[in-house]
Structures are given as structure tokens and as C-alpha cells.
Length: 156
Length: 156
DNA sequence: ATAAGATATCTCGACATCGAGATAAGATTC
DNA sequence: GAATCTTATCTCGATGTCGAGATATCTTAT
Image 1 (cartoon, rainbow over the protein chains, first blue to last red):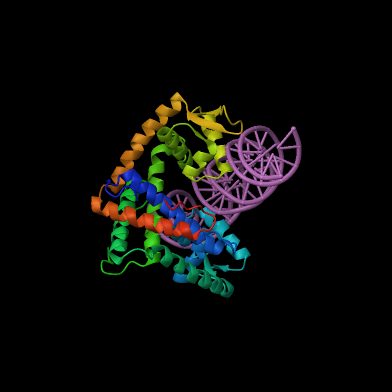
Image 2 (image 1 turned 120 degrees about the horizontal axis):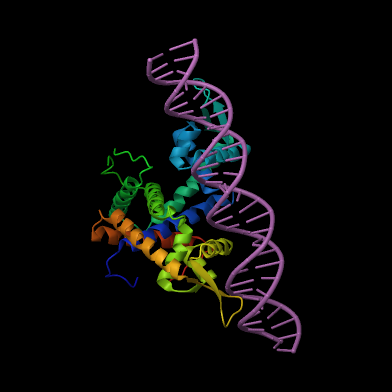
């Protein structure tokens, strides 16, 4: 740390933010790439584990994937027997996606490791630091979202 | 903010970090997508603007692109007349990449806008907040990098 | 000087993602 | 009830990225 007394410019903050995000992303991907899972597929499984069966478009909103990408993501997971598509009784356009038993055990195990990975990465941070970072990141993210016209930014 | 008093878990911190990084990325891309620039190409031009001519592999290290991706990135930029490949006098394997006059003017203008975008995003943060976030992000990034065996993590 | 190893760039094939458009079905309006 | 609008998913083609391997060149050891 040679810059202990300099002010943190916005570009510099963004640089370290982007790099950190990437480093952590690479790191956590390491814990399931060996199982042939990519980050998107992991996120889909994780959402299903914690929220239960959801429609394809709802999952897509949560993991930030376009509909075309969702179709192929679910295809990949279904082909491996980790999830199952189920027709909706009341709306025949809709397809619910749910974890198979195998998929549930699979993601549970991987998610436990994932949590440990994240604890490790954040281990050096005090509660106050986490709080400040959390709030600061939210502020920045909200400002960025508000500035993008296409994005729907819920004010709540 | 309904969670003013809860502790910030590592997964939650990572979630907001990843989302913020993405939101800001989308936002800043908006300011040059109209010019037909993608983020990678912008980063290449930005490095050349601030560091001067560099070899393809050095640029790749700085913008975190694999060599195959760098070849096509430079191809794209060269085709548009924004950069130029130059053979190295002392090492015939190496190709230096430099901005053309057009490329220089182009990236200068876009970078100015880019800086404003980032100032806008970080505007709501006090100097203390920025400092805490900066240091905290660096801590997390370093921890993640150290945990990835393939990555060379300079201790300096 | 030669052989073996390292390095810089490029080529090729695979793949995840996306936008746009197709299809089918629910919701709304008249 | 038919026409129109909206929504959910899928298909298709294009693109950016990557890993692995090819090629050319430099470096090092002998």
C-alpha cells in the first residue's frame, strides 16, 4: 500500500471494484468448475435451492440472464438431470423449473463450499467495514442503475 | 433500507458487490456502445492512452484478456483505424500496438465522458467511505487471488 | 554451434451470451 | 366473441471469449 494518504478517485475506486469482483468470481468459480458447472448455472441452481420452483423468466431476472440464455441454461441443467421443467396448470405458456433430488443434493453440497469460500474472502473485514462497503456499494449501484434508462429501478 | 441493523454476511456482501459491478459496467458501457465500442476494446484503448505503446501480451495482462481474445480485439481496433501494429526492432516475435491519431482523439473524448460517469456514480460517497471501500475491496480481492493457485499474486 | 526450452502472437474450434424475431397462449377491449 | 395487446418461452444467427495447439523467434545450456 504505497498510497495511504492519497484520495481515492472515482476511476480508481471503480478499477479496484471491477478487479475485485472478477477475482472473487474467478475464485468461487473454481469451487464448481471441476463439477462442470459454470457461474450462470450455479446461480440458477442456487436460486432454485433458496426460493423453490420458479418460472424461467423469474429465474432470469434474478440471475440477470436474457431469455435466450435462460433457455440454454435450463437445457444444460436438465440434460444433466439436475432440474426438471414442469408445465404450469393455470398458464400453458409458463414452465416451472424445479430441482430434481439429485440436483438438490448437488447444489446443497456445492453451496456449502461456496459459503465457506466467501467467508474466507471476507474474513479480514470488520463488521463496520462490511457495513460501510455494503452501503457504499448499494449507493453506487443505485446511482448507476438510475442512470441507465432501459433498466427498471425500483425505488423501494 | 430495511436491514439497517442486521449484520452483513459474506454472501450478502458478495451479492451486492457483484450486482454493483455489473450495474456500473452496464452504465459505463452505455457511454461508448453507441460508438460501436465494447468494454474490452475501450479498456485496450484506455491503456494505450495512459501508458503509451505496449505489446499485445502486456495489454492483455492489464485488461485481463487471454491471448486469443487480444488478437481479435486488436484486429477489431486496427480494422477501424484506431490502433496500429508495429514490429519491434529488437524482437521479431513482438508487435507493439499504438494509437493512431484518430484513435487518440477518439479515446480521449470517450474517456473524458467515462470519467464523468464514474464521478457521478461515486458522487454520494464521502472521502472516508471511499477509503474504507477501497481498502476493503483490495483486501477481499487479494484474499481471492491468493486462493486461486493459477494466478500469480505479487505480494508487493 | 546446436539442442532444448521459453516466449509472443496467431489460428482454430467450442461455447456462453445476446438481440431479434417466431410461436403460442393468456388478458383486455370493444 | 373477435381483435388486439401482452407475456412466456423458444429458435436462430451473430459475436466475444477462451483453451489448446501451431508457428516463429529468442534464450539458455551444453
